[in-house]
Amino acid sequence: MKRPLTALLAAFAFSSCVPPITPQTRIAANPHQFAELSAKEKDLVSHGQITRGMSPSAVFFAWGNPSQRYEGSADSKKTERWDYVGSRPVYTTNFYGGYGIGHYGPYGHHGYSTLGVGPEIAYIPDRLASVWFVNNRVDAWERTR
Image (cartoon, rainbow, N blue to C red):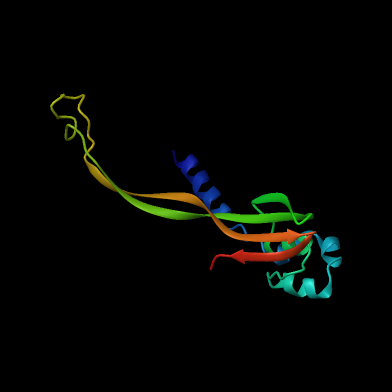
């Protein structure tokens, strides 16, 4: 019993030490692609910022890969939307009850022990940011605060 528990605790400790992925880690992993950006884009990317007119490559360096991509067309121009999705907790409290308390309800040992109150946390998808491209350049963007 000690070995599985020790292994589980070690795995948790190492997984919680994973460094976050930042613009600097994406730059270090793709130096040749980063070198192709303009000086203005390089400066914005290094601070994790985007602005109108940026290339998709610059947005990738600043914010990373999107969770979803949508292609389209508007006014005979190619459009694309990148959505960045995370999760947010939703807290609920449930009350549930049944026909017996413990194993000694009206049904003997087959009664249910379903009297209780318990908080629950569920995580639901949440759109954190979107970037709209027109003809392969940022036209607009938004993100939650």
